[in-house]
Image (cartoon, rainbow, N blue to C red; front, side, top):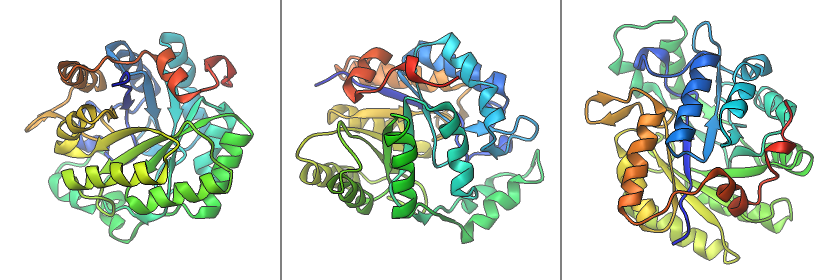
Length: 308
C-alpha cells in the first residue's frame, strides 16, 4: 500500500462554540491547533474561518489573514481552503478568500444537497451566542447549493487560474458521476483526490456497505486511477478511518467532523485526534506521508506559489 495521507479538518462550519470549549474559533486558536496537528502527523490541513468575536463561520478574507500566515510560518503542511464555507453563504462569499490567497488545495463539494444540522440543537441547553440555536434549527429548510455552474466556476477560478488541486467531497454516488462529467468535459485533470463523506443528514449514512459501494463505483468511473480518503461524522470517525486505511485509502479527522475522542469524551484538540488516527493506521502497517510526499502524490503546485 502507498503511504497514507492524514488530513485534519480544524473547525469547519457545522459545530458551534456551545458544543465544545475546545473548538478553535480565534485566529490564534486555529493557528495553534493547526500547527500542533501538523506536528502530530497531518500533512494536509483543511481550513475554515470563524468570526473571532462570536465563533460564527466566516468568509471574510481578513479573518483568514489572521491565521494563514502564522500556520505557514509554523509548519510545512499543505493548506487546503474550503470553497464550501457554510451552506448559508453565497458563492461569491465562499470564493472570496480562496481567490485572494490562491492555496495549493481547495475543497469542492460535487453537488447540491440537503444539509440538515437541526438534530444537534436538542443536545445543547446552554448557548454561548444567540446565532447558534437558529443556525441549527433552521437547517430543516436548508439546501447547500453547488450546481454544475457553481462547480465549473470554482474549477476555473481556483484550478485553471490559480493552480489549486481539489479535495473532491462526495456525499453520495451521484457526486462521483458529476465528477466524471467534469473530467469528460476536460475541466478536471488527474491526479484526483476523492473524499468520501459519511454521516451528514442529507448525504450517505455511515454504513460499511456504502463505503465499499463508493469505492467500487469510483474504480469503475475512474479507471485512470485516483487517490481517495474517508471522513465520517461523529462517533463513526475512527471506525471509518480504520476501514479506509485497511482498504488502502487515506483518512481525515478533526473537530470539523467530530468533537469526540472517545465515547462521551470531548477531544481536547485536533492534534489529539491526529495522534489517535496515526497510531491506528500505523498499527495496520501504513506509513504516514509527509507534507512533501502528499504534494508529490497529488501533484500540488507547492507552498512557494501560494499568495500571502
